[in-house]
Image 1 (cartoon, chains in turn blue, brown):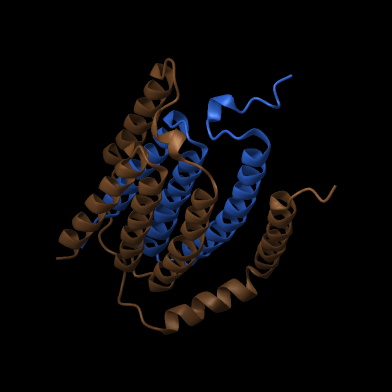
Image 2: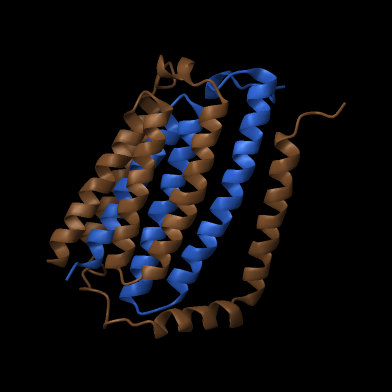
Length: 100
Length: 166
């Protein structure tokens, strides 16, 4: 039997790796992918706690997180395509259009 | 046995996640993330949530990552290979990450609340029925809101990605 703490530690590791991707990578596509990893590590925690406490709410929350993630990715990639069409850059530090 | 499986899947997930963050080429990142999602869905199976594992594969690997690969195909990513990380001092970000990781690990490992063993009981197909009933009875309003959000995202994505008509 696997103890609950292992799942939570896996979630922590994936969360830190994803946060590193969001904070350090320069390419917007990889930043968005790291964001997916962050949401997935949270899902592991939801489902692990739900399974260990014999509660459905963990899984239901995970289903909602997945649905919202799908919406987020669709919008983010739409914005990305529009951005590249107007600005032709994929570097996070060169997108400064909204700076006053 | 279960622990061995967990360790294999967890190690593969962490390695592929690191590959995703460190790979110079965004295409390699996308493929590594796909592999990582497959490992995570295996973890969901270990957690006795087969429905979530299938949803994970359908939505993440089947839809989201394919969308990413399509966008990579549409966009020239060769330039991105040259410089992987944000230039300048990354020290504050690295310190923040280290602090975050150490804090979370300390909180998990020092507490005795997380030492529970194994998901309770064997699960059957009736489980999914119960999940569906809960989702469509107790959580009907959030479910409808989520569907409206998905519809809005669909329309928004089409409007955003459309070429200006003039």
